[in-house]
Image 1 (cartoon, helix red, strand yellow):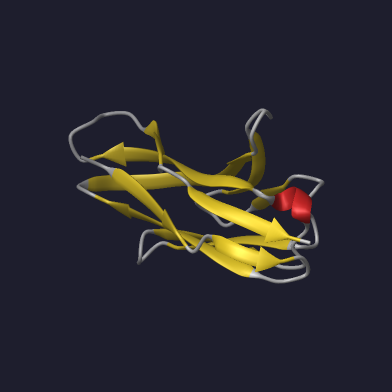
Image 2 (spheres, one colour):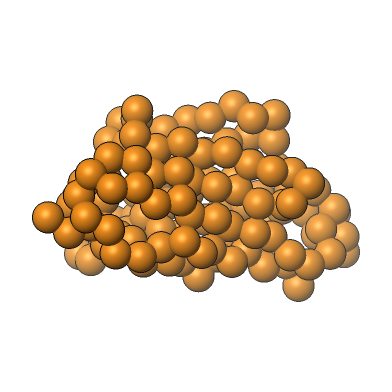
Amino acid sequence: QVQLVESGGGLVQAGGSLRLSCVASGRIFSIYAMDWYRQAPGKEREAVASITSGGSTTYADSVKGRFTISRDNAKKTVYLQMNSLKVEDTAVYSCKGLIRPMYATRPADVWGQGTQVTVSS
């Protein structure tokens, strides 16, 4: 089956940087839009960044100028470079892909399990 696996989370001090990765695996026909979400305890899940198959990007206002989403189609991987991290960035970060498997005629959303990012003051 198609899977997404995130990596790169950890503990970092405010002002520091982290780069998250999300790699897709399985028998994949096409990968369309890829997105990063985050969810802090007691809060709703928030869309952080999105990138289309053509490379167009969208960011939440809270991360503009600090985060950069990118993708490597050959590696079937999406990245989230996070700079100038703030305490309020602390959350579980998950990737989501709109992916069409080989066995399907239509794409569907696939979610990763998430990776913890903790920013200390």
